[in-house]
Image (cartoon, rainbow, N blue to C red; front, side):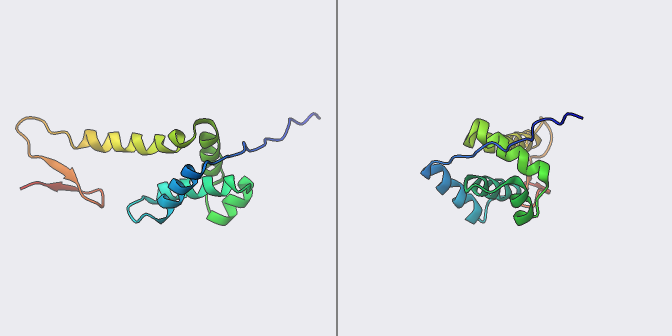
Length: 116
């Protein structure tokens, strides 16, 4: 039986500004839980932690850790922002109004709120 090569997690290298930005996201009260999780995954990966260690420390899904580590290694900060931008564009589209209807916007908790 021939076994394939074991997968090796890509190394994550951070510049000082990237590290500071990720730490700011971790501290920000306005950051979503998903944003904080991504930032913490990337920070731990940059410190040299293996994916299994990150999974254990953050109680995160192994696929989530692998995805965000790989995405950051390939695309840098742009990769970590990809999901955020996709989410924002969906919210922006949901706020679009059609003629003759009331304007709606999402509250902080994601519930629709009417403008009176």
